[in-house]
Length: 481
Image 1: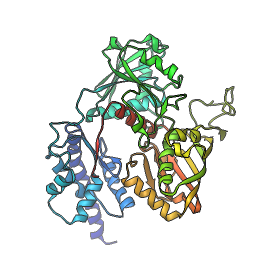
Image 2 (image 1 turned 135 degrees about the vertical axis):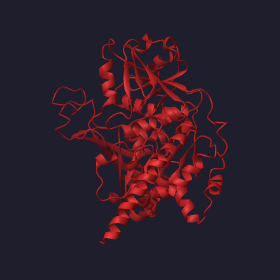
Image 3 (image 1 turned 180 degrees about the horizontal axis):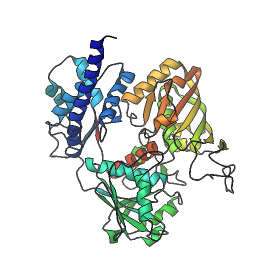
Image 4 (image 1 turned 180 degrees about the vertical axis):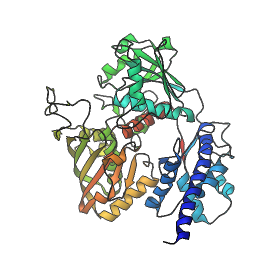
């Protein structure tokens, strides 16, 4: 390689860094002032570093086959800050690719056409209303990740405000609670600042004042004493999973609805956002967000069933170990789960296959399932062995799922990767419910095997937040259409 080429390549990188640095405050203006959530083919651009923004741009070539740099998107971001936009999720990558392919040179005119529904809509603020109070009942793995996501979104017109967490104890563990939120062995450090208000039993996370309430049961809590009213309680304990048990939350003053982060029993609706969230009515006061595995597989199963039909299938889940298992061999009421989680693959049962029917009734009785717990702390995989009603091949199924991941109503639920080197740790922090691994897909006429990765903690928590938004009437437009 010539010296000139070396210098040119390095100069191009420096120019991209400088442009990304200039772009970051403009993205912040869109997010905090206009309630616009910008992304790049599903990759968030909010609170991202210069390097992460550049890497997100590189991702576009993998999904579109088109090079896209920050120099392509920067003019669009700058113009968007001057259009008084109303609230929306905007895929900047899709806009930039469409603009490049259009051959046009008037950025503002292009944006006024593509974003016509929200141009000048800032004053109207289509979401309106006061922020909805949210309470986390339980503060374990899912509770703390939900807290991180809610705090992150609080600055951008999310209209959900984390007001309190409820835990067991006596009030002498605030520093430990703060430390667990601040540092995470899997998901890394908290993005921001956390302080403790010992006098008032509270945590302050990025300016969000979060009351810590100590109680052994819902009946001991009156939320109105803390200025909390009409709140949604997110039960992360899994202790109560039917309507009778979860109704204890509704009996508390200041609570309007309850959301369970585990599969619901009885008449409790199990919701997979992106598939059947429209079933949530204004009168539904108790809803379940189903399980992480159900959320991972249902969107993909729906996509496949819609296009090819599914006559029968088996779901095998290769799941990271969870806090329910033992570190070393000890008594456990569940079969095999008493054996050491870090030392064994543990064959166990999963209700995910049966739970699919609650979100996709058309697949009722068509799926079986098992699970293997493996010695990794996070990120799991579902292997879908399906008998199709219509014959296909590997390339056509992959291309179909790629398009679903890019441009369908389930693009927030289904992600798509096509890399021969990807492994589980690469998906830590992925915000989709499930990620199709194209390189592993096997299709032979009516027999199909699909491999779906999922961050069983973070991806699932993002689905829970989407349900929270829907229950609170926080509805964003997704543009471009």
